[in-house]
Image 1 (cartoon, rainbow, N blue to C red):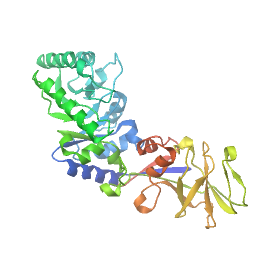
Image 2: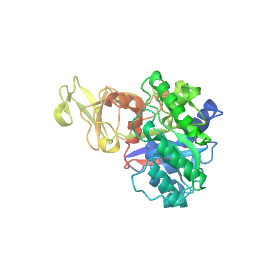
Image 3: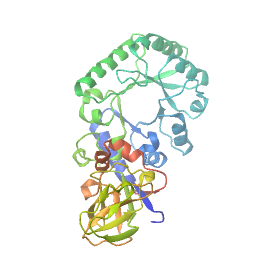
Image 4: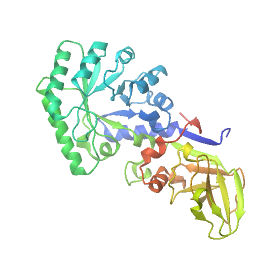
Length: 364
C-alpha cells in the first residue's frame, strides 16, 4: 500500500452482480447506473466492465459524465437525464449520447442540436425531474411533431419511484401507465419503458416493463434491510488502511476533539489514518473497524484525517491492517454499519468516499 488508504474495487464482483440482475429481471433489459462516479467506485473503470456484459444501456445524470465514458472508449448506449435550461446538446449529438428530456423546450433544443435518440421523462409522483400530468399535452405534442418530422427518435419513456410504500409505488406505476397511454394516443410507443431501480426491479416483475435501472445493487449493496448475501450479491468496494500508532492508556484517558469519550478502563488505542475528508461519517456511534482481524469500536470524534479505535487488551501493532469497509459475509464492516451509525443510507456512504484513498481495481 503506497498511500495511507486503499479503495479496492472488485471488477469480478461487479460483473457477477450485473449477471445476477440480468438473470433476475429477464426478459427485461438492464441499464447499469454509473452516475456520481459509479457511486464512488469509478465510472470509467466499471463502465469498461459493463461495456463487455449483456447490459443494454449505461446511465448517468449529466452530459459531462456521459462524455467521460465516451472519451474512455466505452461504446454501449449511454443515457443522461438531467439538464440545465439552455444547455447545448451538440456535444451529446456528436458523441451519440441518448438524452432523457423533461420539457418541450428540451425536445426542441435536442432536435436543433442534431441529437437523435431521446427518452421522455415523466414525473409520476416523486416531484423531481420529468413532465407533470398537466404538462403532458404540450410535451407529447412536441415529441410527436419532432418525431414525425424525422428530427427525433423517441426510443424510451422513463420515470422514478419514491420507494415510500408498496402502495405509493403502485400509484406511481398506474400514473406511468397513464403517461404511456397519453403518448400512445399520439402514436408514440417507445420500445424502452423503464421506471424501476434496484429494489423494485428485484421484487416486482410488473414494474420491470422493458428495462430496469440498476445502481446500488450492481455495487453489491442492498437497497433495504436485506443483506447483500440475501440477494446473492457481493460488495464491490473494500477500503483498507493500516494502524499508524498504538497507545496503551489508563482509565479516564480522553480521546479526540470535545473529549466525547474517555477510556472506561486501561485499554489499547489504535490510530487509524482515515477521517471525514476520506468519507468516514463524523457521527459514528456504533461504528467499528476490523483491526488485525479483530472487531474494534471507533471511539471519540472523527477528525478530518484520522480516527481512533479501542482495541481493548487485544494485541495490536503499528502496520496492522485496518478494514474500514468491506464484505459483511467475511466479517468486515459493511456500508450498512456506517449508514446506521450516521443515520443515513448506504448510497451516501460509498458515494462520499474522497479522492485521497488510492483506487485499485482487481480482477476483471
